[in-house]
Length: 201
Image (cartoon, rainbow, N blue to C red; front, side, top):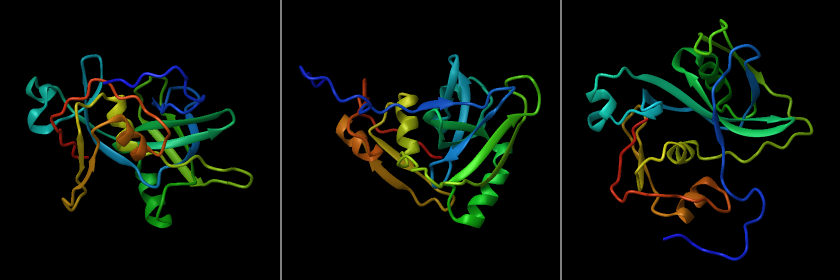
């Protein structure tokens, strides 16, 4: 049931992080605001990237190949732009090394470029500690909850299974719960299916 109001929300209170990929040419660079990356297998299915649902995956049943992608939040200070970044498995070695050395990715400056002119050319990524003098990083978003919104996952529970099969469950059953999980004032959730879907990343 929607919540109606005669008063519009304050500007910027709706949650919206754009999912971006690294373009050919100038590439992309910025400061990572996530403490760590998250990832899952995906398919190009129905004209868009969608997460693989393992045993219940329609794309798998149709024989569609899948690829593992990593996701993290990043920010450029000028002009200010906070976004989710999609990276391929083969491009993240420097991030894995950085996280192992620093214990976090937050505050890491990255620069990613394509090796060739095509938009799907191999990604190359370098990183180093960012100079944060005079900068205040945005609050870290919940990347998995953001992806759930972007992908319109029909879920009220998201299960995060790590390499040790130690799942953590985050119950999400309404817009207020999403907003609390994301640390924002308000979020609009549409067409939520009440059957839980386990997303193993």
